[in-house]
Length: 84
Image (cartoon, rainbow, N blue to C red; front, side, top):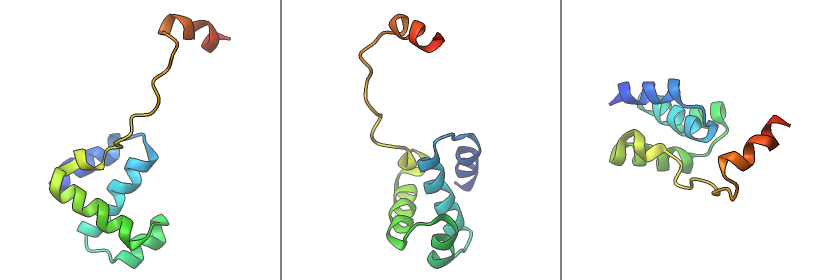
């Protein structure tokens, strides 16, 4: 199970998901909550929550549940705005 966690960490660009995964990885590698908290700037509840989610759902439990807002413009409408 740690293999999928390592793959997730090395391939994930989202900082929030990465922090969750690293906290879980550190805990599973024997670090204490205090050490993880000092390293990552998180509290014990954060570590417990994401470790439990990982144990229950695997890597998919670490993903963001909120996908963000859906844009109103189509790709064609966005293209001129992005090109400038």
